[in-house]
Length: 312
Image 1 (cartoon, rainbow, N blue to C red):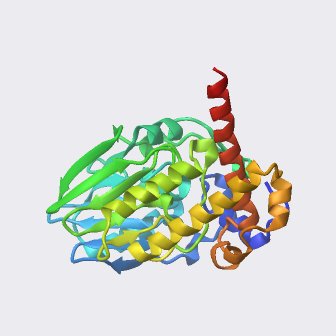
Image 2: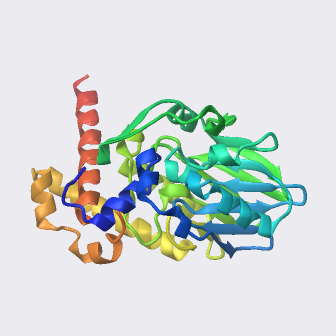
């Protein structure tokens, strides 16, 4: 881990991880779960970790992501205020613990856990998040997805056509977006950090180009009236998503051009190529130095693969 991270950044980094040590460092008793109503039957729940989506049906509730395990009782209580119906589906946007940590507590005989095939594979074994040198243990069996899909899945729920679809090698290799076609609401998971630099988990199959492709997919799907739930940050819209793409694309191009000019990672970081964005976009746990580190690694890896392919 970068020893020069501030204490604040240190804690924010570990908000993304699912370990006993992290729980010991955080006081979840002070976290409040706040609902944001998007339509008559769809809500976003803010708390600690990834934003939760909730769709209320006549006979049950569909939930997207589950944040951290210590928050499960608060999350269930918040949903109970919206509906007395039981939770029927819990869909995970990817495997990280701030989105799946509550799976085990939410799961019951009435609940089906849904995620991409790669989410199951990653949760079912020990992982290492190399960006922060952080080992993550395998999840409990009860926390694992029970229904998995490869490319896409459609759920007919609560009068909604719910389109669940995979975007390749973006934030991770198991990212899913969830689109409520009738209500024009899109949950993007961690392919979208609203107003912040993205975290691209290269050790989980993520890549900068894959992230941009995922964002482009979302942009083609939405319109000016779409309500967009980001993985982190406030409720969003197409205009803000377009700005996010502009920032990620510009930073990617600057880093890639510097690499082509023969610059090392330290030289690129020292040049502060993205100083015009860092204050506004580097306030999360991915600061200006870290986003350059991640993009440098992603880009040079892809360049190496291209060269290796050419040699063959």
